[in-house]
Length: 171
Ligand SMILES: [Zn+2]
Image (cartoon, rainbow, N blue to C red; front, side, top):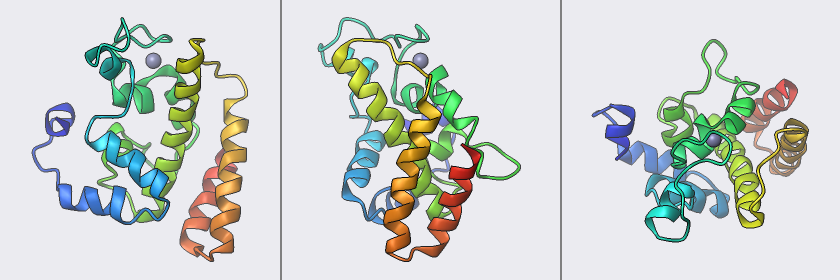
């Protein structure tokens, strides 16, 4: 599925598994990545296929809402990713966010934290059946990442904390 989606026959799933699941200490985040990679994370496209929703469309963009849409392509997610440009000269791509192929370990963790944040917002509004509101979301993400920073700073993860600090400063 991901080979077709990203038009890339060269995806090394062993590396993807290592970066996105095995090397993520927080098992809640590793499970989240597992669901993404196996295309079993609830989103309107999947919920429609599972006969749990009567539309596969995004409530904000009115296009098919698959996992890459929720986490990256949606106007809601784009607002966030456009702010967090940790890669320096190039912005994170959808493949970076979903597969983490070209990212270092700290950036895989940070993109996972941000994706999980975007997903939690989607989940809550999906349960309540109200449209997501982008107002205040950047500040909310900043506070979330500050919590993550505090935890990993306590655990003395220097490289990760350096990158986290950069991300927080961009918000
Ligand atoms: Zn959308």
